[in-house]
Length: 127
Length: 257
Image (cartoon, rainbow over all chains, first blue to last red; front, side, top):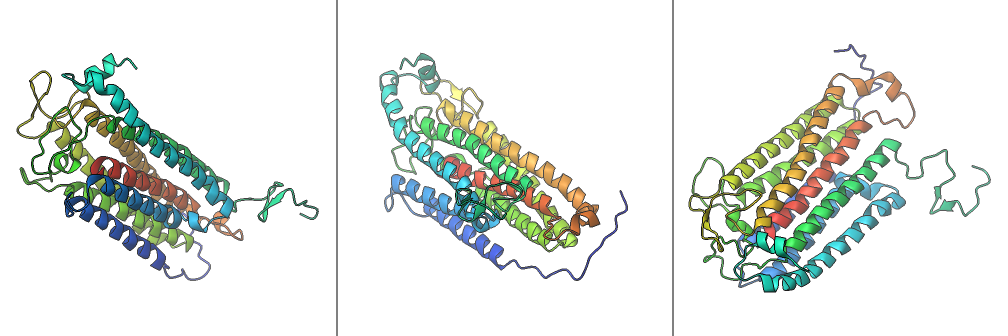
């Protein structure tokens, strides 16, 4: 271990962590809400499709808080914020597009579905 | 810069060189660009998951009547309902909830370490980084247990819909919970994420070592106006938050949807 000189010009400032803990409580609340929706609300009150929509909204909210506050992007130069956020928005579009397009793969699986496991479908797929 | 034309100034940013247009250091900027590229990798995997998931039948009955079958995608809260040390007790999504909480907490302690670095408070940086490393290692151990239990399977197993044999547990070729890709994708995507957590823990340990020997308190780092000696802590803080962010998406994809 090298011997290092600890040079400190003045006192160390007190921690300024209010914003950090506030963001943590928001993340905790959103996660708790997700679990309540997943486990405590029966499918008769909110069916599966709307639940998925809610999960995605809450996940995006959590992601926004983590990126803006924990990674400090919300306080950076505006151009840098766009340079990070805009590619991610393109990906979000791609994600939604693939959710939609997978329905057509599902339909084209239809003739092969009877009496075959998924592994066999992938080997035999003639698209 | 005296004669800067308006073409080179956009929104007050000077692109002529010799300064930092984004007001961020080179290292921090490169870490951000790496995180965007890594986000593309994970997005590719999650988009693949969405595509494959919705090209299979979902389960359409009631939650109480659910049974595993290789013909439809399972309900996640029926697959992931075990907790360590207690056999046969059904606690849906409890263990993964604890794992998520641990990872988010380790992200919070990482932010606190970065904040202590801004104040050049070495003791606090060490304290918070140790908590972060502990949280990351705990998450890895929990993920290992989750995999082990998933591979081992339940007591009963499932009868394959086509061949009639009993499938027990999960491999890359078949699994008792649902169609073949269910386990495939689980191992691949959570494994890819777990490797990122592992590398994050290792790098955290290295930077913690640097902090504890006083590398970032050396005079040549602290004397400049506007110097940020603890910026390395901030950079791997960015990586660690990225790992947490990806987990938020992976958790939603596999355990909620």
